[in-house]
Image 1 (cartoon, rainbow, N blue to C red):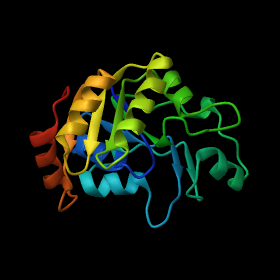
Image 2: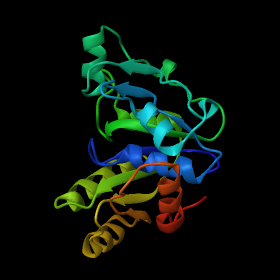
Image 3: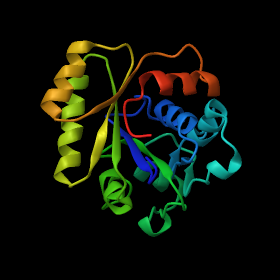
Length: 205
């Protein structure tokens, strides 16, 4: 983790931002960076992570693209009349935790997807998945897509009430490390996230 990582998910709303906040709360050298923010109401992911993890401004580099529409990046960019270029998606210095938008195959522009951005950044990937019904299929498909592009997957974080059979199936079939099984948290604040990190994180620190 000292060199940074890229957090992606099996879908939107699977808990990528909560996991990112937990890692930033537990690993002080990480800087949170959201390359492409789609949707700004009621809040942005950068603002949420800042509040939940208690990050200071120097650990919160600005988004490269901040788009109003809560949609796929290529749709949100078109609505704003802009085109997203990888030349504008260069990560800040230091150990950066970059959070993607949506899932692994989400288009960024007419030619490139979130997978292409992961390849371009070259960071190890953490895949966040739900524990709800259907997650085995979604997670294994996402892992296969990451593998086909030669991306180094650090592991999977399962977000939600733990389901042991789901955990073991993803671990075995996906041939992947389960970095954490993060149960629902009663509160999102620096203390609760640091405690969750200490209790549930099994990966590199």
